[in-house]
Image (tube, rainbow, N blue to C red):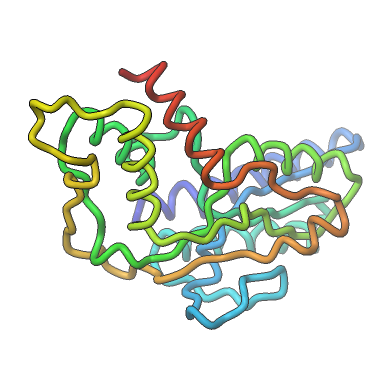
Length: 240
């Protein structure tokens, strides 16, 4: 937890202080774009509507609490010191270059190395998956839209359980890179192993992207299937 506090709370505080110093000397056009997460809103029931820009903050873990803190700091500096800001809360990203500790790159690399693929609990946790290039396009569109002192949800409209994500990856790998008969495995999915769930693991995240669509005209280009295929192909070409 200490690393999250230092990075997200004190790190954001330092950036805001430096921004305030800069703006006090140079009266130029400036925008503080704070990229946050859907985790700050906590857990969603299966029946609940997705998070939107008016959803109450309810973080469940030290990490999400630190991210919520940073969101509040940005808004406070905006109101108190007049720093022009935008806050975007995005859903789970995936794509090329992602840190190998994350679910999708870990699944791809471990499958290709014929190592067990760990899944927390029973894999029923639901996330909305956003291809990284779609996210970047959304960030650019928002930053160049002349919007200020607002927040926007950015999501992929692709809710899937962790188990579904892993099974889709395994099925695609079965087609793209078939297993050697010597492996004694019928499918990469045979490598799936369930491990004890992590503490405070939220069951579902999902975001409503109506505002960014109506105000900015952005919506994701990639379905999960098209985005994950691009991701797998990138790892095959660049990582192994």
